[in-house]
Length: 104
Image 1 (cartoon, one colour):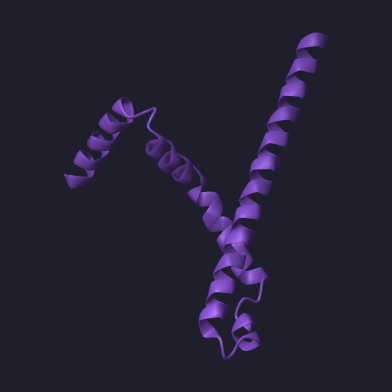
Image 2 (tube, one colour):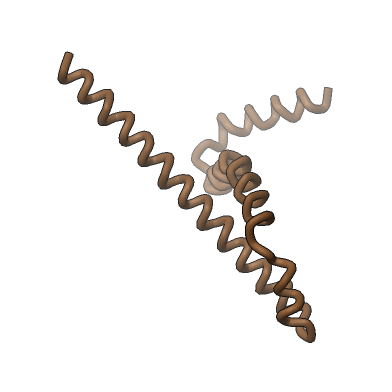
């Protein structure tokens, strides 16, 4: 019951707050969450982040900070790469559709 009220409340808010900056930010994060999780799972397996702890043994806070910043950068770069590849695929589809229309 609470879940239904939650959905109703946010659909009402979406109609009334469509131009709000924070709503756009939350929508953008929600749209990209699946991509971010996939990139995070990939980078967690590919990059040996645990080795940073051994490189900076006496400075653990620095090692954690560097690891966090590097991981955020990798996830951000992966997200931008996926956005770029999706745009390129959409452009190719448009070109194919427009060339088929001209031929017909």
